[in-house]
Length: 375
Image 1 (cartoon, one colour):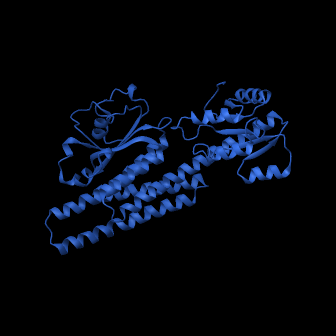
Image 2: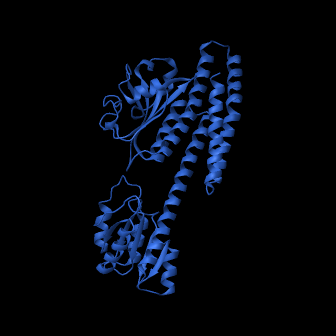
């Protein structure tokens, strides 16, 4: 196996012809790709069995020969498309069979391209580069749509009757799946744990909630709590603030993390933490999504605080009901507007500039709502 610039792409060629494999390796490695090879169905199965299950897409492109010694190319194609980590990876068929029907059959099955042997290696490289770029664009588009769906889902829950603890559970689960991290939790400082306001948070299942003292600034969590600003660290061992006792969960060593404050009435009350991204480092997009989610949760926390404050004042039932109606009227329209912006952003998935502008409007509306609640 020859290694090259992994960032440009990883290409898997499945072909029993050693000369073709060497030719493809020479061309693709020379252009900055990493190339892996399997020369039979048996070798491919061994490779698939040894795949890193934490990697969402282990290859960026697959070149598949239809004539292999131990199995048919069509059978291998179905095997690849049935694999959860490979089903969306571009596949180019390489075949000496020039029959039009065979080509149509494979393209109808979902193959991205069909190249007849013998082929011009420069033509193959050019087509491969196009399909790799298209594949990455589709992946990026799917990620954006998934994240917009997440924000829209949370906004809808806040505007419904979902209890705070259920909202937090659903949010943690959704973030874990969307960003692909091993652990997401709500960090509640020990000094806040007995306050009546946190009854809803304390109902969280144990795996969703971490409680620990924050008596000084010797941890990333303590820094985030004190500074009131989000933190992203992709190598915790190089960060002087990192504390193994505070900044990780039992039984799991922290490699990287995102820590974002959650506020009530402009005061940090707890933290939203993500630790150990699967298969890589956190990105600026990851941090932006978590901050957006935290802003929406802040609205839910403020809503809960105001409701509990109203109940604590001992109002008569009629007055309490009137206040609840007032809260619904206060929160309903802006949350509906935020939801509308997110729906518009989903519809604008093919127009990145327009989509970013809509998301900025949604973010501004969230910030304005939080500001109004705190004044």
